[in-house]
Image 1 (cartoon, helix red, strand yellow):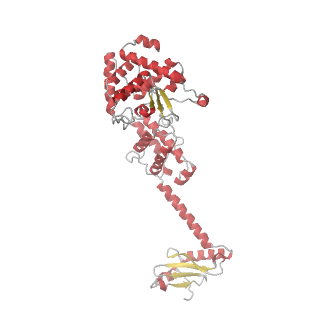
Image 2: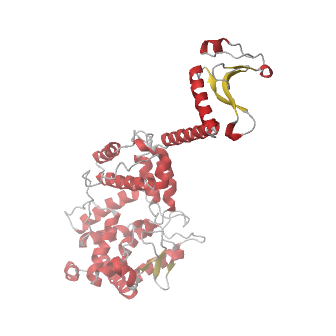
Length: 439
């Protein structure tokens, strides 16, 4: 067709081709290599030239009408012709530009999709791979309950790049306001660790996190000081505790007695396995990675503890599993139902009242049993580092590097002495004066 001074009105009135095989083209009279190509469904501005130094001319699309106007098509055509004269390939440059824009749009979309919840789910997947992951189950439960619950956390689906310190502080304050300041402190610590993880260079670029929004939000700033418990049992409470443990049948009674005999962590004692015990050598080895210490922790068993374990072993049915304290014939470790703590505490208070009429039992936790053992081991051994080793606290500083002595002899003596005190208390042959002299 002959050249025409193209404009939007003329192009709009051009009829579509009857089929794809009957497409036609109208060249522009103002720019000789610009044309409008009309198909059966669309009208496209094209530029014909020798692109990239090619000896043969080729046709490249500039854009579709009416999204691209005629004036815009002429501007782009002039720009392309100038680049072609300089030996550049404008079509290739345009393709690269569009690719960059598409990539930026994809990244922007990814960042918008990188919500706090989705990144936190990735963090939860990462948690079990940490070198020290003993508390992963408890940690994940806290995260899901406090931060991945839309009824509690209104900003969980915000892009993580838009989460602010105000968002976090309001959520932490809500936890504290319901009387759970300890939980609020722990949750803030979890979030601070999470955002440090998210700020690793390769991760923060992918999720669009430019800065850590809670880098300056600390427990002290939110008035969430760490509560250091000092609760431990005195003479009469220990005597009542022993009597209470004796009133419960297996597995709970022996389990409670084992806690005050050895002073180990409740979770570790609950998961005690026969395969980790050597009753001939009188040791219990807690494998590293299953408790706070990174290396194996050896507990030196008293003669009384060995006797109790042998008695339990003899009473177990054929085919009993590996767990020592179990309600499922050793197939699973002892559960920790709320009724046990409640029933134990009720009988504990009754036994204390029986031993010392008028005495009332102050609030206590299972960890206070461990603190009691640690406190009472101190005067037995006379050395803090030995008492610390007894309950599985590792050495620190330079001691950890150069002092590899395990205190086996001292610990075995200490646990036997402590166990003997407990025996005399349970039999009523240890007087209060003897106890105070010993302390």
